Image 1: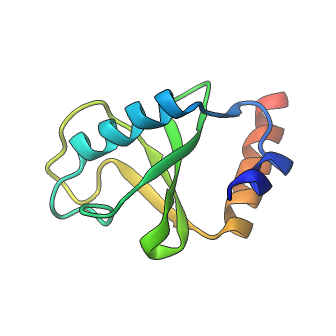
Image 2: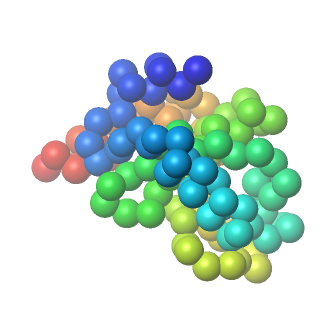
Length: 104
C-alpha cells in the first residue's frame, strides 16, 4: 500500500521494518493525551528520519499521513507530539524538500 512512498523518500528518510514500526506505534500511543488529534486512532508507522525524531504514520481512519515529531515522554497537551496531517501529495512535497536540504 505504501510502496508509492519509495519513489520520493530519500535520505534522511528511511522505511522501517515491522519491528521498528511496532515500537514507534507503541511510542506514539504512550505519548498521546486524550486531547490530541490522533488519540484513539490507529496509526501505523511507515517511515522515519534518521537525523531527528520525526516519523510518518498512516492514519487509515482519516485517509491521511501524519508527520509526527516524537518526544519520548508522556504529553498532556493537544499540541504535543507535534503532528501535521498531510495528503500523499503534500507528504511527497515535504519529503523532497527535506531531502534537498539534507543534501546541502
